[in-house]
Length: 106
Length: 277
Image 1 (cartoon, rainbow over the protein chains, first blue to last red):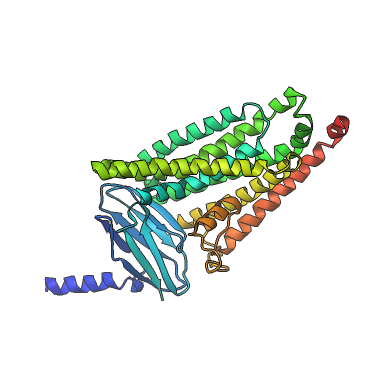
Image 2 (image 1 turned 180 degrees about the vertical axis):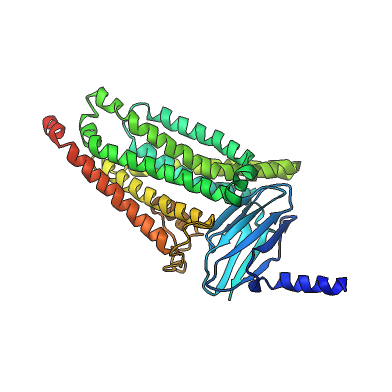
């Protein structure tokens, strides 16, 4: 039963396009999870980023027009404007070799 | 090390360009170096403070503290740039005429200098706080690689300073008689770009979410990610995917600054200019 519940939650978490609330994004060891975020096109969404690393990181994306610093062991909301369908890469600017991700609007 | 250099350089470019423009716009004004120095020093100090309290600032206004902070200091810079241009519209012509002879008129320039020092301080603070956070993160990791990366950071800063020098001497190549009008145009566009950027920050904070649809997309022509795109973004507010409210803010700023300059010019008839001729 617990496992079933867990799978349900995992599925819910994996399909954030269906959710209206903030989309969870975790940064740990300078890597984003999930590294692909699916959103509905032409709808504003909020990504709630949790920085589990000790140092600050900047969620940076020129495609999304976002620059948001999240302090170490802290979290912050990133507001995403309504997007036309497409891929919008983002990165953690301070560790861009590993901290990479993409928002996919469809 | 190269990656660090590039990251720091990217952040420093904007402040570097603004300092270069401010220096050119105040050419011949007494003690401008001192005021610009104050601005840079205050900006660095402020950057360290902002970096130190990044978490606290971010948690203000329901987690949108950083966005509103950025928007507020950008709008402060817009106000100061406007003030400078309007003041110069009234006094600049006379100043340019009398610059060689009369020291008193030149020292009047201290009033817009205070405004421009604030602009410099704000530019350094905005980009500087990100550099401080970034370098602090590197330094706290320790080890020899972090020493190399800090060196990269220092070189990035030096490259940013080189941008200032290039901008300054580039502008000085303009004949002195036209320098004032060129710099006042540059400052007007600088202010308009900052106003549009402030709108974006406010929208990211979850307010003023009107006309947020992208009006056009010129990223195929010139990406804002490229160095040229970044330079133009700072200088004239180039944005490859602007939204409606940003365009309105951009145009409204230009119209306001130009209107105020015209009004100020009308209040100061060209009497002094005629006397000097």
